[in-house]
Image (cartoon, rainbow, N blue to C red; front, side, top):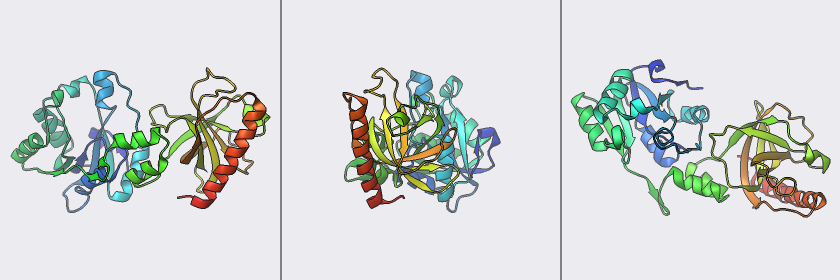
Length: 308
């Protein structure tokens, strides 16, 4: 797997694609492709961590792809390293010229830089594509500015992917990303209530920085790392309105037709189709009956679609 490193650890010189690239949709890949063919330097993706808005405005910015996930997505398209630039107030106060000179040209020794047409940088986001081209030209460095990609629905963006996931529209998100959306979590101890009503579930502890789909019940595929065998599953994402309405949102997964001890294992989940919204039932028996219906429907859907 390609290395995830700081600017000072990067292999030099670089041909770098600069941006957030969250979701790695087709527009992002066009920017990245510019530095993977016929470019001097190590093909590199450079991004900021944490997101600038987290530092500057205190906003929570959940990611479609965490850095550790992004490395496995970048390697097949020709990138050799992912560089995370630590974003802090000191960096935010650099002028556009100082940012390009100190970070891109001196530290990363960029020989070719690729950005999307809407990329902004430097103090108060004063730098744009034209600014970067002017600064880089003085240093003899090539800059590629890639136009914003659009489809029939408008501009290709991470925001559209998030909106689709929030609405439970997994196929829309998959089309936008060009791949299935997945997340992973470690199995932790729960209340074991599912086992008592005949539907044992694995409670997943997911990285709090990961963007998750909207609340509800889903048909899903599950993988137990490091195995490659997909298991059909039903996933509940959200609180427990029947048992404990005040409980925090959680991820619970039931493997269909399997008896596997999941304690302390890492599980990768690919939600495939939203089955229904969450609902409060009158009693546990009614809840169990509904889960049985959910499992039947999930089994039918997953049998038809098959794993990716």
